[in-house]
Length: 103
Image: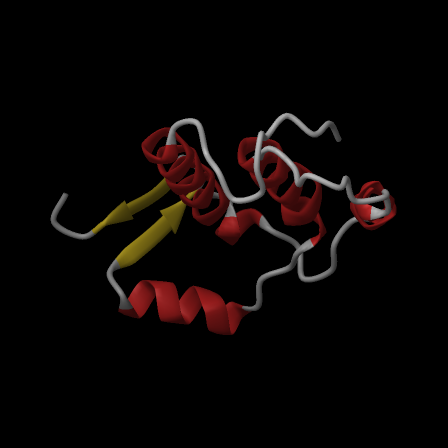
């Protein structure tokens, strides 16, 4: 992971970062119904990518977000309890993704 941020916590385009985070969150939730109870061994092994020395000046926020989602998300699991909560909130999951009731 490279250090491209001029200062820790500074973002070149905060709105773009928040939009990227929102998109990644939606994609994660779209796949909740298809997730396994136990992460795949290769997803768990990929978590080794988090083992790197931290730079002195911080990391680019978009790179951190991508690493957390691309490497961390596949190593998560969702229980049926989570699915029940989403259903109660009006989210219905199907293979094509999630949609809110009334949309």
